[in-house]
Length: 101
Image 1: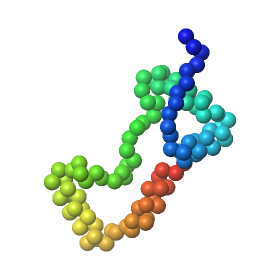
Image 2: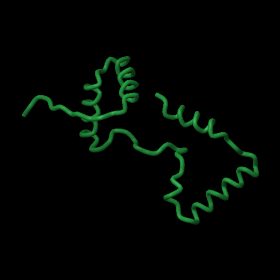
Image 3: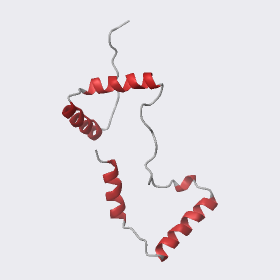
Image 4: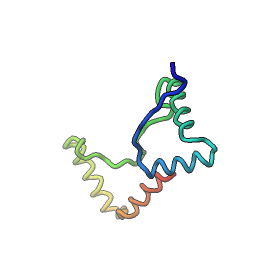
């Protein structure tokens, strides 16, 4: 059995760069970090961290029933009437901060 095996994968360049910068500060080469991840998958028999949607993830309106869609629209009208309005720019900034490393 070989002492090592290669994995070839495509990743987003920005994510790769950010990860390399963080791992470099930790003194861990990317290959070692990937190896650590795979060891944890084996030890835990699954992904070694929680994989969930962010708490404020946008709704997929196409997946809603007509009743659920109507309820969401009503929530929007109630918010408008209560003047609880947030600009799209504020939402965009909040989402960007949530995903920054």
